[in-house]
Image (cartoon, rainbow, N blue to C red; front, top):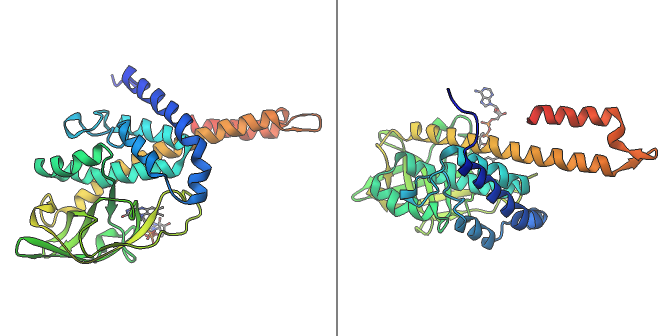
Length: 289
Ligand SMILES: Cc1cc2nc3c(=O)[nH]c(=O)nc-3n(C[C@H](O)[C@H](O)[C@H](O)COP(=O)(O)OP(=O)(O)OC[C@H]3O[C@@H](n4cnc5c(N)ncnc54)[C@H](O)[C@@H]3O)c2cc1C
């Protein structure tokens, strides 16, 4: 029978991330939101703790915790700061994961290893202005010219767009949609100004343009023309982590609401003594747990 219990290692991972979040992320979460920026030192610390590659096997510099471990990390980080969880999610579960799921051994050694350690930051470039839910109709093109692919097009809403070192890009070739690894210091790669968002403001979301970006032929991920399947497979992992992060944030909100309801007094008593307030807290707890 499948055991729905966390292992001792998973519980230790959760405790470690919870402590880190309480000590290093929560105290600066408001600043991250106000400044619309996650400090580079914080990203460095998250990488050093092994949280930016926790899902990947140890042979690629990861933590070997798989998707469950990744969800634990995202849940705990999001208790302190949803922007930081979003940065880590786009980096790990989609940006880097394309290389893990579809890359060759050489690509994994060259690109996944520095991504998993947090030495490099990753991003995932699929969405375009006219290709959101309907991402199959993307227009960015990749043409083979000798030993190089030449990429041209515009991407939109790319998390980590302006802070990434390595991005996974989906573009149309003569065979269909294909996936590519692009180093962001390649001439012709430009990240535009961050979107002004209503929330998760510390997580940068940028337009990206590819203007004759030349990358080595060997930076094609998987089979030419089979990239869309890889994108969909990758997004499955992305959705898992997003759900876990929302759960973490919701748990934190319930805790904050409960503490406030016990502290706040009206009509000479804590508002937690009013049944209408108890109903709201109980409903939140039911939905979360
Ligand atoms: C904060 C943020 C970060 C993002 N980060 C990234 C990233 O890192 N990389 C990346 O590639 N993209 C990223 N995106 C883009 C994201 O993946 C798209 O927003 C998403 O695919 C939806 O596309 P859209 O916004 O164009 O909405 P649309 O596709 O225009 O959809 C509009 C509405 O119509 C509904 N709808 C669409 N089609 C159907 C249908 N067939 N049936 C029923 N309802 C439908 C949708 O649910 C939605 O409510 C990000 C977006 C945001 C907001």
